[in-house]
Length: 256
Image (cartoon, rainbow, N blue to C red; front, top):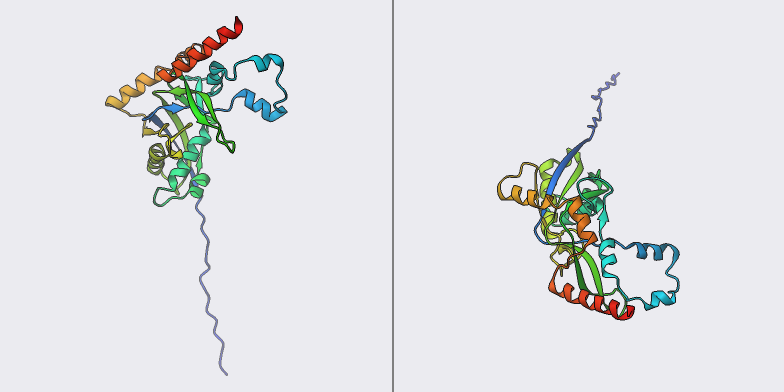
C-alpha cells in the first residue's frame, strides 16, 4: 500500500514598510515679473448675494476704480515678514503640471505624494499698479481694462512636504525647477502660452554670490515696503500712466 507524503511550504510573510514624510524649504527668485490675480471682494460679494441693481450714484461712477482693483488683486498674510502671499496650492498645481513634462512622474502621483504645509507662501517685492487691455470671457470676447498688482522683481519661500521613499529632496528640487521654467505662478503665466510671466529659479538656503545678493535685495522689499506701495500706488509702465491720467481727468470733470 502506497503511503501519501505531504510537503510543507514555507509560510509567506507580507512585509509592509511604513512610508515616511520628508520636508524641504526652498527659495524661488523670479526670472520674469509676477501678476497677482486674486478675486476682488466685490466679485466675491456678487457671487454670494448676487449683483443687484446699481443705484443712481453707482451708475454715475466711472466704470473702474483702478486703485481699489489694484489693492484687491493681491493675496495678503496677516503676520510675518511680508504682507503679500500666494496660495500654496498654486505651487503644488504648478509642480503637478510640470510632471507632465518630467520623465518618471505623472500629475496624479505628484498630487498624491506632495503636501503643502502652508496655506499661503511668502512673496517679497514692491507691487506696482498695472492696467492692461484684456478680452472678457463672454461669447463676443468683449475688450475691457483690468488692473492688477504687478511685481517687476520678486522672490518667495516655500515649504514642501513629500512622501518617502517614493520621492526624495533632489526630486522635489528638480520638479519645482521644472515648474519654474515651463509653468510659472500668477496671472498671464508661462503655462497659459501667450504670457511668459511668473517664471522662477529654485535655490536652497545656502545661496552665494550674485544669487545671494539678488535675494537680499528683493527681501528688503518686505511688509513695510508693500504696505506703502499699496497705499500710494506707482504705475508700472507708460501705458498705465496714460490710462490713470484719463481716469483722474474724468473724476475731476464729474466732480465739477
